[in-house]
Length: 139
Image 1 (cartoon, rainbow, N blue to C red):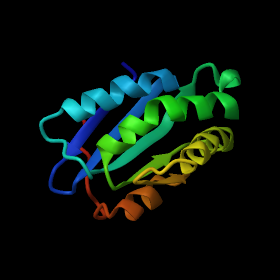
Image 2: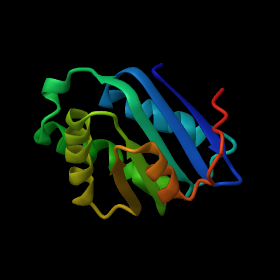
Image 3: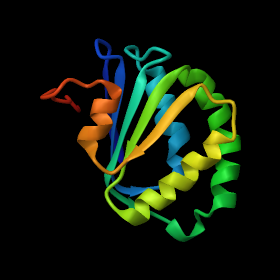
């Protein structure tokens, strides 16, 4: 497992912290874990923090791969997420380019999820309405 998460039912946000290596193939397991959490409710916003990630197999993540991934995984996931905001924060320009390609493939769907990519974590938190000084309580 290369991630941990925290569900805040009062803010209606799921905070996800990814670290070490990351593979897009891990996303289904991550989402299934969150959907099974008793505190999770459809429509909660999602805050992905990918600033500590080293993307594995980066060379295979081209637009075609990401498009296929989006069509196989995200149609079901997006319906289960419902209408919400999803913020993704990355650390490097190279990671920004990779995640941006993935998000572009998701724009070609009828997803109810509004996604934005950030390089500044505080801006992502502000976009989601996280109060200033809020402390995330990861397990």
